[in-house]
Length: 352
Image (cartoon, rainbow, N blue to C red; front, side, top):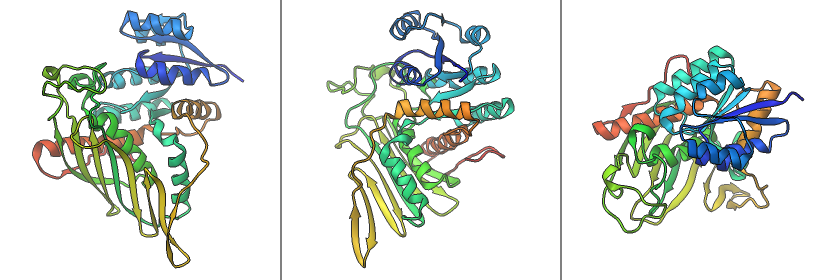
């Protein structure tokens, strides 16, 4: 088996708890080099994971190391440039979510991947949850019939990230919707089969993060520098006629809730409690799957990416699907500004 040489761009939090451990578990993979803009983070990651080659300049790393695969783990604003550079250097790319700051950047990344004949995968680790995989199989078998409505919720009572650049719009692109909302949005689109979105109507609010607080929940941040939404909501319409309601919050005066609801004409489900609702034997039936396998979604996303590279398979989570999710969020953000329903703009020739 040919050794798979891997490089990491951005060696901070998500690289250290997800990508680096994930790559270390892949048989025949070698983490050849790390890069980061922070000398301190780079040195710490190098020591922790036993990687001796480290670079402050990822362009230099790509030129000298010539990796087969690259994990892009930077803040959102750097996703496009790092991904494009890695693809043009001949590497397959696994990029952290969200794929980019907006759909325009995501479209460029998809086009560069196509031009170079390289895989571009978005790191939506929640797709690999055993409940989600079970639902995908059952939906594919027709258990739900036509799915006409979905509700995706990720709401924290107090959970504004107090580290990194999450609250800085220039480097993050958005707040709760783009951070946690995109996870729920992707899971829902995946289970629905990625119907083409038409329009979105929504709102985005910064009501908690901009005020001095004593209760933080996930570390301290500066309310004066809070530049993104702490709560966002959107209603998405699809060509099929189906609708999706998305709610995402870092902070809201309500109990926290993380859930997904699907309604089909033959059955439906909730993710929490994990239950399928249908009819059987002329009665209503609640099905609760048990004994599902335990899966580390972070390790699994790296494993399937490596497998796709080695076997010449399509990207497990194509850049086109990350682009669709981002285009939907773009429309919700525009709607929040205009107060009107906004079209979801997908570039011509690009579909999920």
